[in-house]
Amino acid sequence: MIEFPQHFLWGTATSAYQIEGSPLADGAGPSIWHRFTHTPNLVRDGATGDVACDHYRRFLDDVGLMRDLGTNAYRFSISWSRVMPQGRNAVNPAGLDFYDRLVDALLAHGIEPMVTLYHWDLPAALDDLGGWLNPEIARWFAEYAAVVFRRLDGRVKLWATLNEPWVVTNGGYLYGALAPGHRNRFEAPIASHHLLRAHAEAVRVYRAEGRHRIGIVVNLEPKYPASHDPVDRAATARADAYMNRQYLDPIFRGGYPEELAQIFGEAWPRWPADDFALIRQPIDFLGVNYYTRNVTRFDPHDGLLQAAPVSQKRATYTETGWEVFAPALSDVLVWVKERYGNPPTYVTENGAAFFDPPAVEGDRLADPLRVDYLRQHIKAVHAAIEHGVDVRGYFVWSLLDNFEWSHGYSKRFGIVHVDFDTQKRTPKDSALFYAKVIASKGQAADDPPSRP
Ligand code: BGC
Image 1: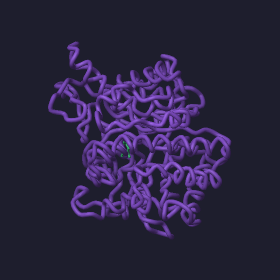
Image 2 (image 1 turned 90 degrees about the vertical axis):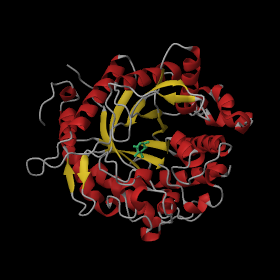
Image 3 (image 1 turned 30 degrees about the vertical axis):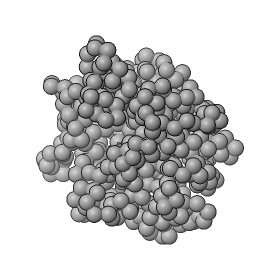
Image 4 (image 1 turned 180 degrees about the vertical axis):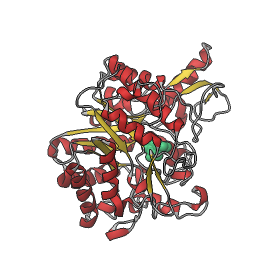
């Protein structure tokens, strides 16, 4: 028998560029993702977010889908360049109006909005000024955040500054698979540091102007050593520092993990001590995105970490090549509790890409692997709560199949299928399963598997 707390939030999550479409509509400026997708050969099949799920025009229907599922929360992101086409100074009222209407529609259906201010779509005009490498960006971000707070705070009570700063840096500045596509070991720590400063400046503005709660969303991927060999253990610690502690240690403990200086070597700058007082400002909650774990071993051929994941023979892997391993979600939530003092926590993303089997019985879309993934992970969240972790909500990634960054539309994460030719939405079995879980306060995740 499992029962989640009374006020637990059950939601779905999306992000602006991945679903909205119409990226330049109504006075919006281009983002780095608009630019990246319109540069040949950077994204699979030449896919762009020009149409995506056409959510910009269909958002009322999509809110209707959320209501039908019984969700009581929705995490979405705001496109900075819709609100400020140049990223700073002039505000585009039509851009703000869109999010205003979205928030009202959510509230009208009893769905609590959680707003992410930055989910990777930097205004292209700011990239022209150096983007996350320019120290001024902390001020630009805070200015943008203040504009959004003034319009939506009160109706929005849960704010996240950044989504996954690690991915912004690792994908955007170190390995180049994500916008803006740089590959530079010297840039990576600088971008990370400015992301943290920007986060902190936005929190500072919120303390002066906001009335509710603000936090940050990080992706955590627990690392387990492949053996007891000290070289594997040290490699695991490096991988863990780089991915899991790089952002949380400065925020909760006021300094970077010591492994980072070793990892980056001469590319690791000296940081002004004052920055850490700013970065360490208290936050009201932590958002954890969890997809997978890694079993890690020493690998002298890896240029940065000298560490590599070991593939697990009997495991199931998703279509993005990520091992399905739910116990690590409990582990990582307990780790957050113990290392960082049990902050109020939301699982802000969790889900899986699988090729969906074709429709069976009319419209029904059976996605048993995703149903099983959700079942196991929801139980893992419950197990963490039983261990005393202050988990307050769970958001499935994602509501809709959508634009999966450099994979284009080839990886489907939605619990609702999207036909990208017609924009028809069809809830998959996983959506029906999730609705049952919500209606039963979690119990349905513990029931023996059955057809939805
Ligand atoms: C991101 C999403 C992305 C998902 C699946 C997360 O890293 O926040 O934008 O679609 O993972 O890859």
